[in-house]
Length: 132
Image 1: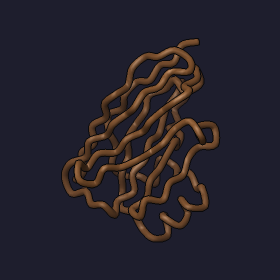
Image 2: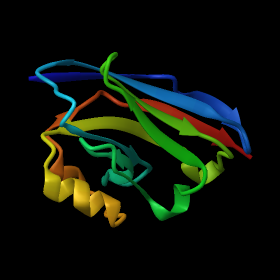
Image 3: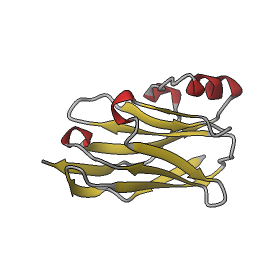
C-alpha cells in the first residue's frame, strides 16, 4: 500500500508560480514511476508530468517549458514546479504512483504521457486556481 498526500496548491494570478509537493509513504521504492494528473470541469484526469524510476521525465505539451517535475528519494517526495501559470492550468491536481519498469522509463524518454488507468495509487488532490 502506498499513501500520497499533496500540498502547495492555491490561487495565483496569470504569470505566477506554485510548487506542488506529494509526500509518499508505505511500500514505495525509488524504482516507482510517479506523476501528476489534473482534472478540470470534465470527468477525465489528464496526465501533466511524469518521472520514471531512472529519472526519465515527460510532460504534456501545453506545460513544456513552464512546469518541472522532480523527486527527492531521500524524502520520498515528488514535486511539481509550475511557472508562468495560465488560467487554463486551473484544475484539481493529483499525485499518482505505481511500480515502474524499464519499458515505461523508455517510453517516458520518448515523451509518452501516461493515462490515469496506468497508475494504481492516488492522492486526494489539491486545487490550483489561476486568475486572469
